[in-house]
Image (cartoon, rainbow, N blue to C red; front, side, top):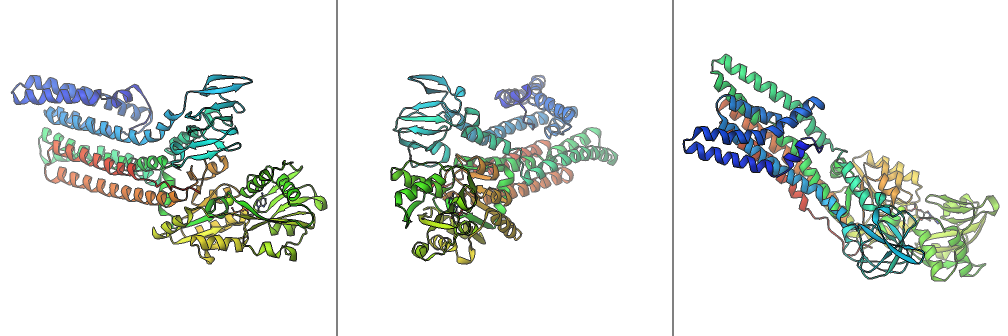
Length: 634
Ligand code: ADP
Ligand code: MG
C-alpha cells in the first residue's frame, strides 16, 4: 500500500489486472465444472500470475527496501499456501476478490484525491501579455511578477495578480465556491483560475504560476496528507504491529494444529484461512478513506484543511474565539463622520490617508477610499511605524504625526477624552484619532458592518453544541458591544481593547479549558491563529500570513461555512469511529470462525474483502457532504 509510482504500481492501478484475473477465474470455473481439471489449472495459473505476482513483488520490495510489512503480503502467502495444499481454486478466488476490491478501493481513493487536482485543469495554458504597444500570447509558466496580462471577457485568470486598468465582474466560484460574481476594479486582487465574465481588464502579475493560488492549494492539500491525523497514525502503527502478529500467529496455528494431530494439508489450509480472516486491511484503510473524502469535500467548498490532524482537532473543539474587524465584520468599513476643528475635512482626510498609505488594516483601506472619493491625491508620509492594534506613527517624538486608537493617543502624550470629541465618541463606532505629538487634531469614526453571515454562523455553532463563544478585539468596548449585540454574542463573551499579545494570552487561557479554535483574518492576529488548537483564517485567497499561520483556511470570506466545516469534521470523526469499530468486530468474528468453526477459505475471503470495501464506502459518504455556500458573502 505504498504510494510511490513504480512500474508495478502502474500495472496494479490499471484495469489490466482485474480483467486478466477475471478471465482466468472464468476459464478455471468453467473447466472445473466441465471436468477438465487440467485446463482449470491453467486458468488458476493466470489468476495467480496476474493477481499475485505484482502484489507480491511490491510487497517484497517494501519489505526489503523500507522494512515495511505490506498487508498484501498476507493475501499472497495465503493464496500460495492454498495452492500448496491442493486447493488452487480457493487460492484463485482469494486473489480474484483481492484484485477486484483493491481496484475499487484505489479508484475510490483516487476520486477523493482528484477533487482538488481538478482545479489544475482549470487554469489556462497561455495568456495575453502587453509588451509596450503589442499584445503577445505567451505560455502561462513564463509569466513573472510585473508582467501586464490582458483579460478579455470570458478569459480565465492565468496567475494571481491585481487589476491595473478596467473593471468587470469576476466569477470566483471555482476557487472560493462563491456563486455571486464579484465586482473588481483597479487595485482589486485577481485569483488564478477564476473567470472574467464581462470586463476588459489589464492585470499586473503578482505571483508566477508556481506560487499562485491553485499551486499553493494543491501543495497544501498534498503536504497535508503527510500531516497525518492521530487516528491515521494509530491505524498504521496498529496495522504494522498487527501484520507481524498475524504472520507469527498463523505459523503458530499451523504448528499447533500439526501437534494436535491434524494432517499437514488441513493444518496449512486452516492456517491460511486464519491469515486471511485476521488481516487488518479494513482497519488500515478505514481512516484514510474517511479523512481524504472529508478533506476533498471541504476543498470543493473553498475550505482547506492542512491535513487530517486539523480535521480531527476541529471535531473536538468546544470553544470558538473570533477576531472582530475583518472577521465577524466585513472589514469594508466606511468613514462615517469627520471632526477637524482646525482644518478643512479634505486636508484632514488627506493627512490621515498619507499616514495610512501602506497599512493593510481594513480601517486604513476605508480611509484611503474616502480620500479617493474626495478626489484627493495620497501623499505617503515618511518614516512610518505601524503599531499593531494601535495605529500608525510617522516621525519622531513631539513632531510625530500619529493616527490610531485612544491607547496610542495616550502613549503619544495626548488626551483622547477632550470635550469636543465627546459626540463622536458616543457614536459607538470605531474612532481613529489623528494628532501631532501631544496635540489631538481631530478624529474620524468608521462604520463597520457585521457580515450578513456572521449571526447565523454563531447561532449554528451554538446549536451544534459549542459551549464557549468569545469575541476578541483591539477596538473599544462600546463598539464591540454594539457589534456583539447584533450577532448574539453576550457582553460577558466580549473582550475588547486587546493588543495582539493579549489575544494570544486569552487564547491560551481559554484553551486550557478544552480545545479552542480561533477565527481571524490574519491582520494583527496571526499569533493567535498559530497559538489556538485550530487556527481558522478567513478570506485567504490573497493573504500569505494567514495561510501560513492557520490550520484551516477559508478561501472565501463567508462565515456560513464555519458551522458546516465544524459539522463535517465531527461527522468525519464519527465515521472513523464507526469504521474502526466495524473493522475490528468483523475481524474478530472471522478469526473466531477460522479458529473454532472450520470456516472455509472462500468465506473468509468474502468476509475480509467485503468488510474492507464497506469501510471504504462508508468513508466515501463524506465526499458528498456539502459545505454550504452563503449567497451573500459580505
Ligand atoms: P480587531 O482585533 O477588531 O481585528 P485590530 O486589533 O486590528 O482590531 O485593531 C484594533 C484597533 O487599533 C482598531 O480599532 C483601531 O482603533 C486601531 N488601529 C489598528 N490599526 C490601525 C491603523 N492602521 N490605523 C488606525 N488605527 C488602527
Ligand atoms: Mg482583525
